[in-house]
Image (tube, rainbow, N blue to C red; front, top):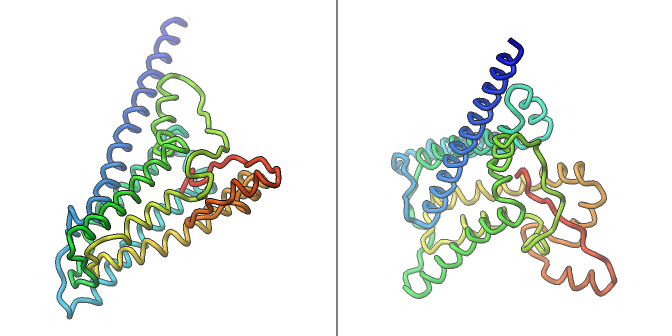
Length: 275
């Protein structure tokens, strides 16, 4: 009887671990798909899919777009706060917390792109083919910078796959150490830098795109403010030293050489773990 009970518990444990892992994979797929949809929309491959609004409906379109941005900002910021996560993980497995965040982001971002009032009025347009391709290349470089930054800190942990894989293997959850790699040596928030480049650099800027870029910039500014507070509480003086010598958003390429000249060993960074 005891052996049967042990087998039953083990079986349930395996089913549980497989379910958590499957959930994480689905969440990752949805979150990354929404991010790719955002990138392709910003590059002009996909248009904003909302119902076009005439001049008389500008106010209604602006209100709708503002509400969509507020919903996204609340989801993306509130769910990233340690106090929220502490309460949230009482209801869901800790291993699924990051996956749930990624899933929620995808489920909010996709409707935002679909419902966004396009407002096709052209603010600026670059017609020269060579210059147009150069601008598009810079925009692609911004999004590539974002993806590279995610791998610099641990892409699979950032998107929740590492946590669910550790659960599948029956291993305890581990968090990557505070470290400084690649662009984090001169940019505290390269993911946000990539977002800003991606939303602003475009050969054709419509009014709808401009409002999206402006709203995204406001969110980045507010998000970085709260993220910095969280990182300071988490890492203390180690992050304070890092913040003093490395800029956020605007890179500080001379900082490492300057620190070496005065004999200071760079700290390591875990910036943007939850932004």
